Image (cartoon, rainbow, N blue to C red; front, side, top):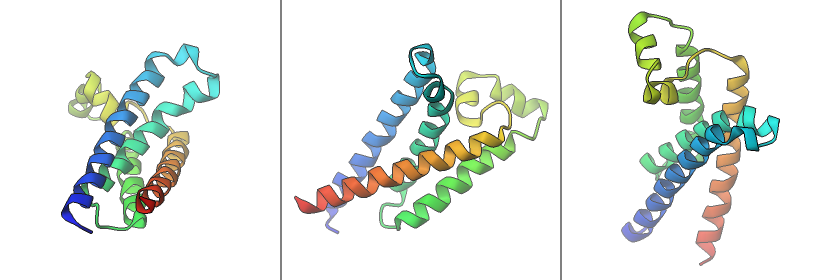
Length: 135
């Protein structure tokens, strides 16, 4: 892979991270305008998609499988960390940034939402990689 091609792909992942963050924030802000199923599930799925695209940005030469595994491990670790309720981490979670990154409380359903988001991100990634190779 040439240096220019690598930079172009890496820039694409950066754009994917930023767009996913914007869609995630919008899904929370405008949740009342969305169908109930989408409003309840999109934010967590989009958060996991952002994690996936972030790993792809960081480890561009590694396989999709590696990005999937790391994304699941990271997302699940954050979710399980919500079982830990020390005052110092709850103080972090009470901030806007802390709640966006660390969440607030453990929900088993979030594990399924994360998996769905990562699967969808992988699908989008594969499609984009196929389309960029054709050019």
